[in-house]
Image: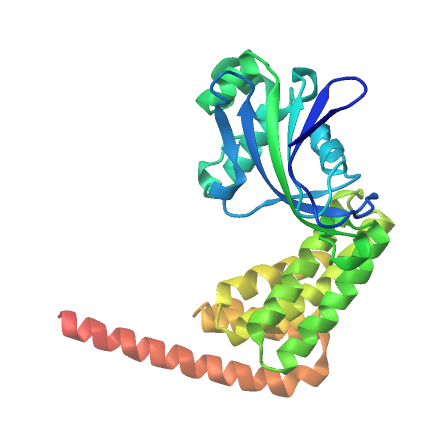
Length: 320
């Protein structure tokens, strides 16, 4: 093993296995690694081991990760290298909170617990070993194994890594992908694309003041995605999802004929006959060309209602 220390002696590195390749690091580089975290006590008490979790740690450099020392130490390593780093307590004060976040991510959403300053003061972090580490800060040892190093051009960025301009570009790309999937009868893939794109737009809308020009522009980008998503859900006969998303479209655009018509079909599928009739009639008011289609839908609705009434009548006859 080869040991070396940093000039300020806050980090001491020990190489366990040499790496296979030195790769240059820069902002946006994604590093995937396994890690073990131990106390620097006589027993070298194990705190965390990523190999027991669902997946390795992924770190994108330059994104202000809560534990800055990890960004520092991985940049001292080569691909496939294994090394230990003893880090001064002053550099790892945030580790209990980082560990909590990682552990909580393995749990079902309903079991996760928010952790603010007041919660920590009154109830602790929620894990006995992390509470003890928070109360009694000490040096920590990280054993890191670098699994992969990818430059920004070598992997597909997640939405949180993108600039606002890049996000808008991705939305359009996802819309096109969704349309192609729908035409190929791959409704599942289409839904995934539309849902992802809608989520990105919602992130952008949160930055804008409602009803301001920028917010309105984003809302108009969202409308066709919601309509396409609704069409997919209609194909799956998930009528309440269609009603929900078409209703959202109508909040943005009261004159959207497709939203009225598709919501009418969803209400009909959900046996909400009066609401279906009202939606179909509103669609015909907005677009006279739809009147033949609306008449057809209303005739189907009337037949559905007749069959429903007949079915109910037979049920009552059996009861009495």
